[in-house]
Image (cartoon, rainbow, N blue to C red):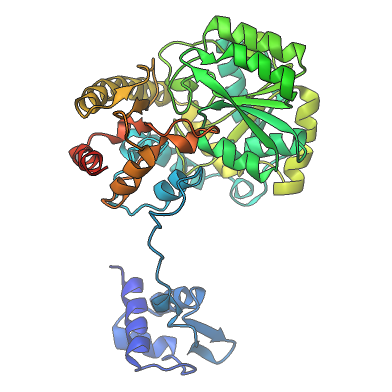
Length: 459
């Protein structure tokens, strides 16, 4: 504990014990410094910290006084997670994000901290601290940092996707990217297609935009194209939102034949496709994409860096027609006043352009391959069957034994501090109740399997 922390705790104890009461003046800086045998600057810092949290307040020329709100923190008790609430598209998000620090989270959608390039991020942060004051204090420009957009452009070129830097904009996150697209292209009552199953937050966000959501059955090679074509003819949707590579939650990747038919149907029915490419860098080799043969004409590519670099340093991107970028930029100004933080984009660009980034990805891909093999074996031993064996990524979409309900299993596991991802949170038609999505990077702790076994026995 530092000297400043020691002083703040001392003042808090005096207030809680009644030695200092509401409205009472604290000892002067010099007097308290002499009493505690510290420098006056240490006392000033402690008092300022207490004032910042509302425990005390400063009166100009008079000193510091105890406020009447000092007991508020004691009366605010965090509500325990409601494990019995409806298991809907918000359930896994709430349980994963609000979980206790010691919770096990095989149902979450990100890699463990120890898998991330933390040292590279720390190095970039140290460099950032020496940057110009404008980088540390100003708003970002409307399209996002040029350097980071150039790095994305180079990645696209390596895949065979031709684009210009004017066709790329940065956003505050991948979720914000999709929200901007929906704000720009959709109106309440429009119809949007999603895969069934699909990433649960696609559904949550689309419901916030008050649109009609239609699910298309997803197969190991992409959407069921016969159903896809039929739905386009009967519902005339405005958008189709999908993951082409390492699909969430199934882990499947689009086949060339399916990609060709989806694009053909989209052209025929004037459908715009949003291709979320967030997992693509976990692929050992590039699979089929919709944006590449389309050339960003009716396919919008979006993504973020939260899976590969850091979920704490949020930044997303959109690549599409140049005229759409102009409208999306204006919308981002209206709703967020500019692009993502310059500090964020500088950090990301620094790590992405370093020689360590590719090594980091290669190591993660290697670890995921091994983790997927081990997890598949252990899950099969419990009676869970992977729907497919993905070519990469960190998800396994597994079927429970006949008669078991994944929502019930998830609730039982959560009571033992284990967060699961039950199938129907991903399903528009609510037809995935027998599935669980597992993140293989979070399955190294044997307690997950013992809790899961117990939950299945009790179900």
